[in-house]
Image (cartoon, rainbow, N blue to C red; front, side):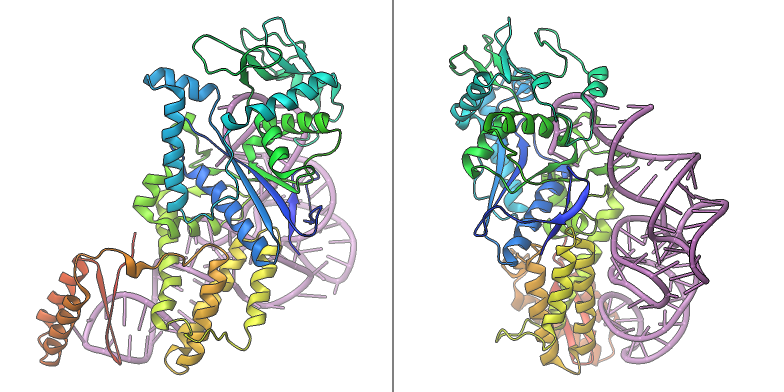
Length: 461
RNA sequence: GGCCAGGUGGCAGAAUGGUCAUGCAGCGGCCUGCAAAGCCGUUUACGCCGGUUCGAUUCCGACCCUGGCCUCCA
């Protein structure tokens, strides 16, 4: 049974869905005003592994990951670049889709876009107005009345008085209280807007998640996730809205993943210290990136620099090496002690998604593969099959490198390897080394062993 | 200032009241024409000060330090 750290109680507890047959998961995805960076990649991979593990444990999961395609940043960026907001977001949604596929993410079961659910948001706002949790301000905006929600601050462990001290009111806002936040922003001539009973405008940021999560997953929602930075104010506000509108605790569990850190600060667009997913994939490849993320625990900060990614690439080579030592058992047989390995692996993930520990199990298995490869090849093949299956639960070993385009036909490589073998037999080592070096140039790695020379494509980066 | 999360060996990073994490790097050996891969062995830890305990890196308290949130942010 999976135990997860609960952001609200700050304790670990078993994750028990409201309905036995299905677990509803809602994750705050991305705002499409620019390309995604490694911080987003971490979030995406963490929840990807969570979903994989839940499903491998026999749970049916309904995974919803939203896309924010209307907000201040999109409007601002659109204005700066001269591209209409809808076109900008459409382009970035496309870019996001490419990143998601390249990262090897499972597709979400639903990927709702805010602009397609404005009707649902208007309904939630209407309920809040009806129940007296919201008010219409003089400037046409609709605000949430935080003073009406006594447990405000419970998720972020903050007291409203403390928050009020540092709160800021933007020019043009007409809040009764600095903590109040916009549910609906009155229409402006150069901004996208929708009709609503209280006047045309566009939704505030937080309301989309309250509306889309409940309309797609129902009430209550078993688990809601996102990055650490969304805890406050986004998720705090979402709780205030949803719980007030539906008259019940809508989200049963909250979880948050830690940041990607560059040097001593977090990776962020505003700090300019980011690397986009696209660039990182070009440099390191999806599997190395995933290993980099999974070698840290999801709640800890994850350090980024070139060295860390190179490290992950080495780790990947170690894992992949097992598949060269032995192919997975073609008849689908696992080792006789598979249950014990699977148990260790599952226990690690059940323990608040301890992916570093789960990877350690995989590496232990790799060692046994190499130990057995020569003497007990059948046993090694069974181990490799198990390795592939367990790795799959982390989203590893998905791509088949053999399908990649190669600069040289395999037959040509074979021919050169044979030529080198003859040179070695004649003790012409200079020539042999030259052939080996030339092959390395095009990405072929040679390894001489007792049973001859093995060669393989270097599947970096 | 308030609230959270941390401080583990050269780097990264887990677990754990008394015994192996794991990956990378280092060192010695095996293998080898050389190399690579691999196997075996091995060095370097638990921020600081008290307390509990037969025994603490692990539990408790104080202190020091780091990161994050408190404003848009995965």
